[in-house]
Length: 143
Image (cartoon, rainbow, N blue to C red; front, side, top):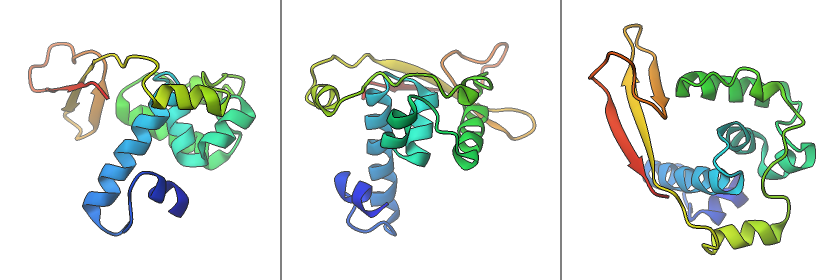
């Protein structure tokens, strides 16, 4: 969306570098906004953060629910039931709360993720390394 692109420093959405870095900044902001809840962050990325706030969880849009399920399948998470729960409350409910997080009122915790591709070619990204495998990549993020 043009306004979101501008908000995250993207002046040319067709420039791959700007698009990727702007999208990553937006995803980071959504994860911070929803206290690391990947279900709510994915829903907000697809439907908009205000829709997630308005419905106090994943909006009842078929496209958004399908998107959240797909993202969680790619993450290797078991969040199948979570996207269907529209009563999940977002952690941030006011602009003031969001502003406090953006200004660093809460310290960000480092996070380690593990990425690998299974025998079927399906990519996985999870908080724990794959059991019995050594061909994974460790990713450490602090923002």
